[in-house]
Length: 83
Image 1 (cartoon, rainbow, N blue to C red):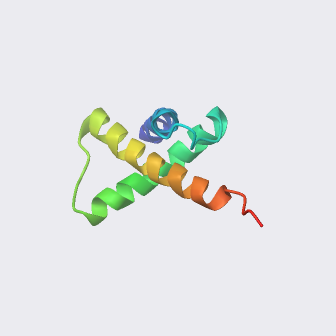
Image 2: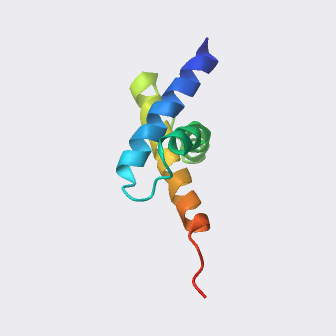
């Protein structure tokens, strides 16, 4: 059951990250998928700094920060290169 919670938190985080990154999003579905990946990235980044999330709100904040990072990286690498 906890795996389902992680997915739901990642989806909400992807939605929030899409709102935070105005113009940097890729549409609702892709933002939600990147939010799930962002939850993992956020947990990894926070663990590098010795920070742990407590509870639902902490997990949501961690996943949202990770999703913003993932959306930002995706937007950097997906921009068309002008010749």
